[in-house]
Amino acid sequence: MYLKSFVAWGLTIWVAMACQQAMAQAPAAPAAA
Image 1: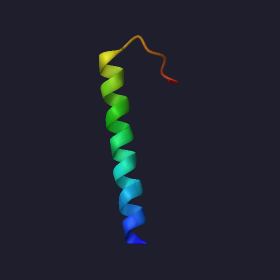
Image 2 (image 1 turned 135 degrees about the vertical axis):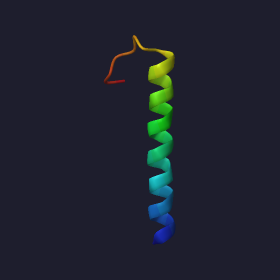
Image 3 (image 1 turned 45 degrees about the vertical axis):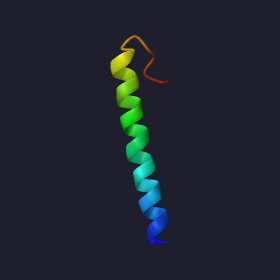
Image 4 (image 1 turned 90 degrees about the vertical axis):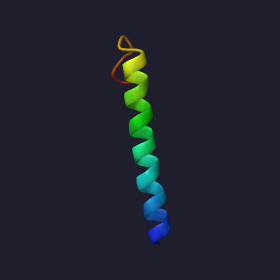
């Protein structure tokens, strides 16, 4: 059970970082993307 929660948390953090990096590289990109 704990492993699933940890993986989900890690994935959420990874996605957030990827989105932030993408926004920084392409400021003109739509916010919905």
